[in-house]
Amino acid sequence: MTGRARLPFVYAPEADERLSSWIARMAAFYAMTVSEFGLQGCDVFDLEWRLSEGQGALIAARTGLSTVAVQAMTFRELGAAARMMIARKNRYLCRLCPEELHRKPAALPWRLRCLLHGVGFRDATGATLLDVFGAGCFDELEGYAEAGAAHLDAWAYGAEQGDLGVPEVLQVLTALHRRASPPNLGEQPRMSLEDRRNYHDFLATPVVPQALTVVVPEYDQVAPVLTKPVRPGLHADTGLAVAALRADGRHRADHRGPGQMGDRSHARVRRGRAGTGPGGV
Image: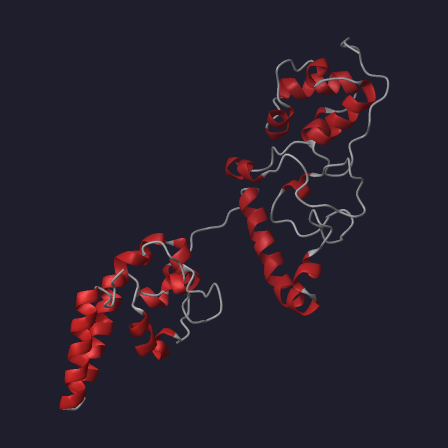
């Protein structure tokens, strides 16, 4: 069908249906393309992001829908920064929605459930978050996840968030982003096996990672090497950590007897010749 007359049959848009989904259903019924709606050379995903008044009027005239109904299928209410987060198809699946139907909420990464049916979204394997985390863990996380989703919604839709004060900023940056645990191998100074054994207790001490190390990567260049969980910039601080270990070693040596001092000195000479001292590669 290549004419510009009004189409005799038009699908009514479903709740929260996106424009690309509706056009795809219409195209399958009439064997039409986007150009045959009078929108020559337009990409349907560009149209559903920002549909001009003239383009909306063309679709309305071709289908008999109101321009308000056409515009409602676009993402016009989202801020520009959110466009990169919109998937071209459903990110998640609702077991009660038809497979060929693509709703706007399912294109956003922070949605947890279908707004129409109230059931949890499923991933490509058919698993829900409840299946992935288990009932106990999911119950503990659900409230935080909902709060985070609401905050992202407010950001995407341009709601006023206001500026955080200094105490609030510090509270965010010093929040824990995982449980306290011993540093991973990638978070430890580069040491010989002997030094790792000598300082096993120190290296096995749980550290408390803060969100600051993720939010502000530059912090990684000045923070103590064993108090942060991220690897970038680690080698810049290795010298400081190794110097501290050496100082601790000298302090322990000062409290040993003469015989023990001699043995320790010979051991240092052997390590120095082999190039395997603390910080050696």
